[in-house]
Amino acid sequence: MNAIYRNSPVPRYHQLKEILRERIRSGEWKPGDLIPSERELSETYHISRMTARQAITDLVNEGVFYREQGRGTFVTRNKITQQLIRLTGFTEDISARGQHPSTRTLSAVMAPADELCAERLRVAVGTPIFCLQRLRLADGEPLAIEFSHLNFKGCERLLEEDLEHQSLYRVLESKFGLPLMEADQELEAGLAGAEEAALLKIAPGSAVLYTRRITYVDRNQPIEYAKSVYCGAKYIFYTHLKREQLFS
Ligand code: GLP
Image (cartoon, rainbow, N blue to C red; front, side, top):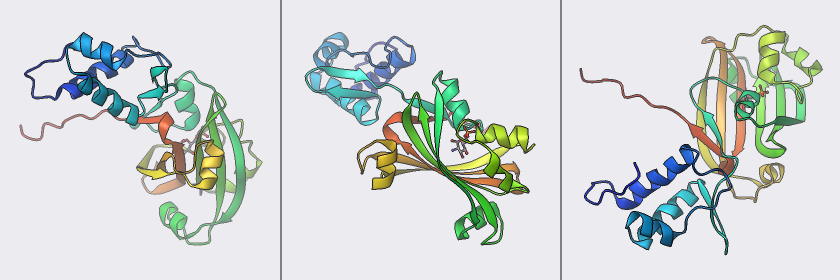
């Protein structure tokens, strides 16, 4: 779709947004590219500059473009698109994008499960669980802080594992023989606290995305409860939705 349909019920700025998104999806515009100005877009698509400005501003607010004073509007770099269908780990997500994942372990200890972890991992409060806090980076750029809480027979042996240079999920599956099957995951918008902002190298109060995941080896045995804080401006969570034929 490359034209604005004047008598369409879809507002013109919305049609333009989809056209601009398609020029990124198609690869015509690459991360870091300068995009045409509002004036150029209004001439190309025979719409008002106000309409062009509204479409661009929406996409800047959604993190698709960013503006540089006096230079123009550019396609945002490094939007990590994490799909929300398959159960994958950070290493897999970043590698799938052709980027280099790296990790800084902030802490790795056995500690008694608090009420929340006990409930999520279905153990008694105070049960010793493995608590891992890591900073996750892509091409050296901090993207997320992850707090993983793990409970399974022998989980204390994770203390001997190097989880800075190994994928936790790979270790769980290959060294501990745990078949990760599925997970429940929640996403919640938020604003970075001072400590999170310092670790993620963003301004305090910046938009972040909190995720909470319970990972199961089978439906009755949760082995991980993980809370993560993602830089909001660098992540897109993507899911493909299908409409069930509800009414045959
Ligand atoms: C994701 C999840 C975490 C999980 C991590 C494992 O980011 N949010 O719950 O622990 O991946 O990543 P890796 O296998 O790279 O250590």
